[in-house]
Length: 131
Image (cartoon, rainbow, N blue to C red):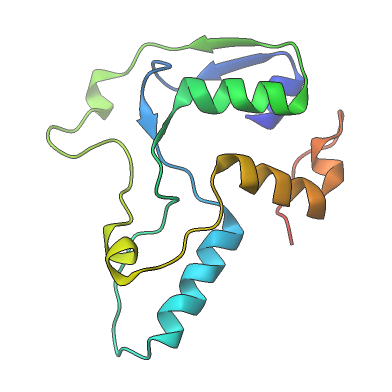
């Protein structure tokens, strides 16, 4: 999304109102530490930040955060990609149930990432993996 916004055109993979999950790498690593500290022989969970945001919100938030003027164009959903029944986002239900402390909402994840990798947010630089 960041590269596309810098190029001034972001084609969303579906309607702007489509809810979607996001996961920040530092939150994922913290969930591993949390799971290992429980010392259970097996702990199965899905990781995503607990809030489901829309594609449009994510795109507009990034556009504002990067302070770029870019066109955001939603593409029509592909019917073959819609599965009946399950939501189109990941629910970290088990982590919530166990009391995991999610620390990285979308805004905080961007701020944290930028503090570690400021070059990723500069024009002409390809985003990397923070850390």
